[in-house]
Length: 288
Picture 1 (cartoon, rainbow, N blue to C red):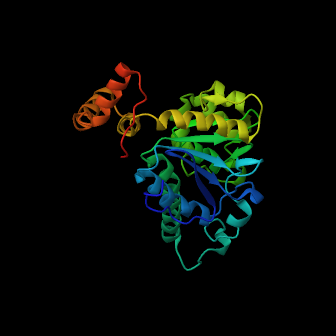
Picture 2 (spheres, rainbow, N blue to C red; picture 1 turned 90 degrees about the vertical axis):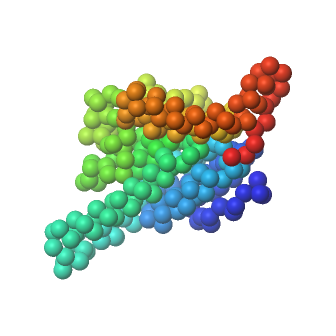
Picture 3 (cartoon, helix red, strand yellow; picture 1 turned 120 degrees about the horizontal axis):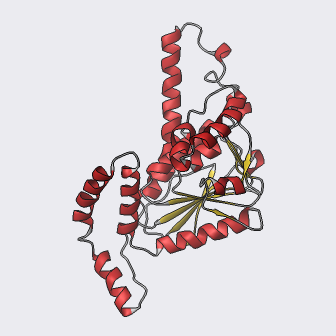
């Protein structure tokens, strides 16, 4: 992996390569149950921009450090000290429109940081354990695949701190689950829900049998290794077309696929993959 450009320095995220072409990003603030403060979410865009274009990365695992949580969400104690979340501490010289503009720009920037996970060219699998609350749900719905430990507890908790979730859950969760009743149930009530319920509604695609982080990361590694062994041209193209087609008609999706593949079918990967089926040999694909 040494021939790839160096990743950005991160204080709150660990980056390792446990397998060839498989990156493991670990949210690293276990003493606070990986709760996010502003410095943390600002580290996400440069990190995922690096992984998105790194030829040494073909699949990404996202997990939380420590035994207790994927992430407990926003660090409410720290956020409460910010003028953004405390109107009484805001600049009294600003009128309503200017205060709203300041708040909107802050929310837009925050949203863009979390969206960096979704826009990464490489597939991202969320390996979730323990607590996954608030911002944890925002981040996990940005991932391509979600799996969790048996003892995971989820919650869309924003109404409990007096706000509507504004970093992506309300926009993405209804598309991921496609049950309006269930989505409104958990978002309006802020009630916790467990791994079994999350699997039942399709929020996660796999649940561990034992519980704890080790099992779910092991399954994430299995999946990521499988994907990393495929043609990177094919994998990245598949993610791109799926994401592009998400809110568009079938006709639009077919047209985009046609244009995309008119370029990508010229890859040597296609011949390599076809020949591997004939020769029964494991294909080896060039970096992308």
